[in-house]
Image (cartoon, rainbow, N blue to C red; front, side):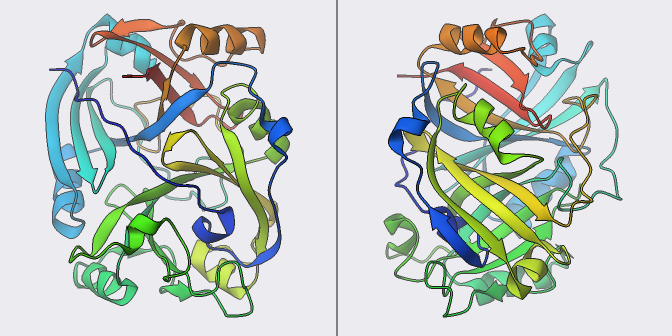
Amino acid sequence: MSAPRWTVAIAWVPVALGALGVVATARIEDASANAPHAAPIARVTGVAITVEDLERSLDFYTRVLPFTVVDRRTESGPAVEYREGVFGARLEVAALVLGRERIELRQFVAASGRPFPIEAKPNDALFQHVAIVVRDMDAAYALLERHGVIHASNEPRTLPEWNTNAAGISAFYFRDPDLHWLELIHFPPDKGDPRWHETGDALFLGIDHTAIVVDDTETALAFWRDTLGLRVVGGSENYGIEQEHLNGVFGARLRITTLRADEGIGVELLDYLSPCDGALGERDRRANDVAHWWTQLEARDLAAIEGVTKARAPRWVSPGGIDLDATRVFTMRDPDAHGVAIRMASD
């Protein structure tokens, strides 16, 4: 069964509002610096997360968190093997939605990989999370506490009033049963996308962005901005006690850059200026390793993306574009080994 297609519309949110750090400086890139060298990505549709036990993960994401399952399927065959870069792969896949956003959970029932490394730190290059927007942080945190979730932050943190760009934003980092990081985020009335403030009863509202740790911002931008064509929409340098306790990293000082396509969730680059002890991206990371994520994008011209990445020393997973589920799919890795899956846009 092929997965249903989806589109997500979201307005621009400055990085200071989505990244939840103490803002020392903020800047908006000149539009001329964002001119893509390939056909632009139309949207960032979501993420696909490798899990060890799909049923256990579904219980967490639908009982502790209020995601809804919209599709379940088994995937196998040569095209799936090429997409994942895993020979003999057979996957059980569940697609889930929260608000307008979508994620996938994928268990490799054949050709399983390595478990999540228990020693991994939040400033390691394998770090990736999604930020889940909540209407009431206290109520959402109390719900997670009742279910005994694993803390990554020691408690929810609200940014202070002197931080004018992010004052009043609160956040909490926690982990799922496979130790993947997740984030709760609450925006005060004067911040965040307007839809996060629409009247309603839902406690959990949707996904604002996915964040990845990078070793060097300029190198990451050469891929995400200059090659894939995402636009830089904001940036900040974040530090302080709130940032340390939020990320769970003592002495944390980060350069944060937010990028967006025309539609979909944001992509945040987290560059730790301090401490400098984070592990670099693992070149041997594979899609069947439980620490693996795909950031999923749709392109208006996949051939152009394929061409420009080939010209720039590709780190492809698939051997070029492959035909799968009546569309064309292309997988690769960014300079920090994060997985990137691109398919042809649905419109």
